[in-house]
Length: 113
Length: 109
Image (cartoon, rainbow over the protein chains, first blue to last red):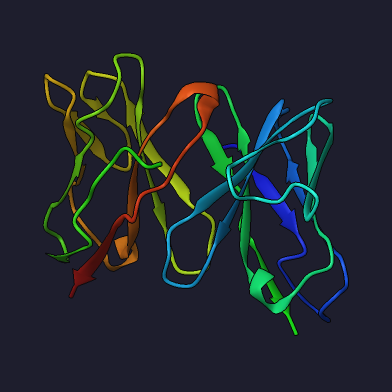
């Protein structure tokens, strides 16, 4: 099946710094990728839809200037959490749109101290 | 917003069939029903999807009612490794998924 990777798998950073998370589709091309956030014991929340070569579409309540998304190629999308604060600590998961379904990455655990 | 409702938790004896229900009464005619599962601290894993016909693959079967307002995921012979949170999702326009709260399935030895 289709494989999606994320890097890093976990990251710890200091408050005020920026963190970049990469999402790659390893064996297929994805014009559309999605970014989700998941807090402990909660469901996944869609943050934004990332389209290759164009600006991302953000869900209501998600700050586009804080969560910068770049989808520069058909196999790579990046999420940068700018000026991270402890409340941004969460599990960030990406997915890539295949022919008829989304394939999810393994997730990135972000802890902001 | 999620268009699905599921029971928060279920138990199933190992080796028995696990039947997980999902209500999606506001589903539109061209919207698919997808099922994923998530094992703790991992990304969701695709299980199966369908539009209106029943579907079966190596993992599970999906039964969709004729009016499409509900569906049931069937794991025919549950194992301990099937313990996970199962999400029923209606795929909306632009292929977006809005996850509901899911069902936490515990398979009991």
